[in-house]
Every structure is written in C-alpha cells, then in structure tokens.
Image 1 (cartoon, rainbow, N blue to C red):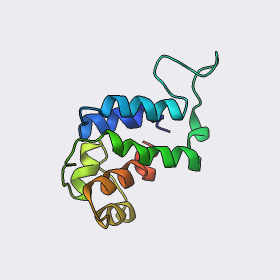
Image 2 (cartoon, one colour):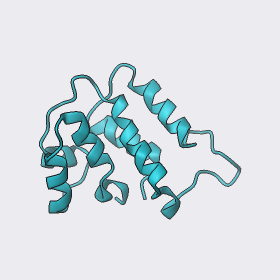
Image 3 (cartoon, rainbow, N blue to C red):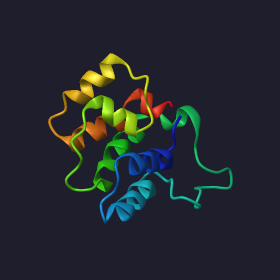
Length: 118
C-alpha cells in the first residue's frame, strides 16, 4: 500500500507542482501524520491495511492542491502512465475520463485502487 508520502511524490514527479505545492504537500502530510523524517512514535509510520481507510482516501484527494495551475489536461491513460501505472482497469479509466476537469481527474487517479495498491 502506498504511503501518503509516496502518493505525493508520485504526483509531483508525474504531474508537477505549483510554486506553493511543496508547502501544500507538507500541510496535507502533517494532517495525516506523515511528515517525512518525523514519525508519530518510535515504531514509525503506519503501513499496510491501516492506510486504506476513508480518512486516508479523503486526504489523497487533498493532494490536488499541490498541482500546478493550470493543471495539465490529460486523458485517463496518459494520466495513469505519468503516475507509473500501465495496467489499469476499464472501470478506473472510465471514472477518471468522466471527471469534469483536469484537477478532478488527478484526484480520482490518486484515489484509484491501482494507485493506492501499487
């Protein structure tokens, strides 16, 4: 399961970030207790299935705030490829392609099962 840090880095590498994107990413990561190099306790960061709850899903959608403006207009296949995913279900492709704007497409791709579990 991808951690919030891995999701943020993957989005930044694949799509890019706005000038304030780094600050937005740190704010979002702080909200879910995943500030790099600052684990919540000596055992480290949560991992595995504990990262698959609705709270984590909602914060995956928040990562859109770090995107550049305007957000690049990409179809679902291009978007998933930029995120490093090449074997995506037809359901995920159609949901992302049906999004009304580019930022919503990125948010839905970042919340997809393929991105969360790869």
